[in-house]
Image (cartoon, rainbow, N blue to C red; front, side, top):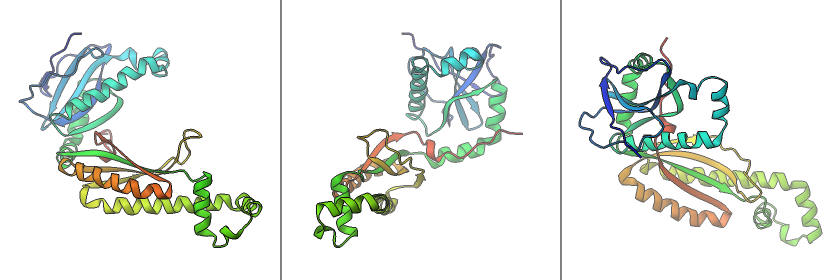
Length: 282
């Protein structure tokens, strides 16, 4: 499998792009004229370019416009076999760029009809992009998820004992009837307790984080065996603090398990959750 060299150019001298091609943006990064690393193996882009605009570089690929426009494109974009390798390629290029610079990652399928339109967009936001790249330099995004199994018999019994002082004195039949009547309220109480535990834990993590972002949690489990997602946070963490963060999560996970709560940390990820919103220039 052949490798390609990374082309580098400035906005003053854009390379020619054919009419049947469009520009696919992977990420913005700090321009580094001393970049020597070769990009990952290229099989999906006809060319890979580092397009400089001031202090910012756009990592872009040249792709066929027919891949993303028209009726056939709609069919392909719904085809997992066609889509998956391109999504993986996009992620691989963002990760590669992050090895030599902080990155402003672009969502998959961010397209520009020409280098002129990309250059105009970048010029309009170059100060914001550069400020963001400086803010996330030396940091990583980590995701923290808190989930709980609230509808299991053991969890319901624990919640009932805490909520209803007379629970242990009831007969099995009366327990069953009370659960039938108040099950939803009991689960909601458990959900609130789990959320408060996770929120307090995240607050305790603040000395180890540069920024914390709370996301809306989709509470519906993916399957019958899946726990309910209670809370989801993105944490921007300086690289030297990652080991301490992981240790704190391990300690909290042991404590949370007694309340049937699971805390999981995943990453590192490109800082998608902390990007400013860039509007198209008028």
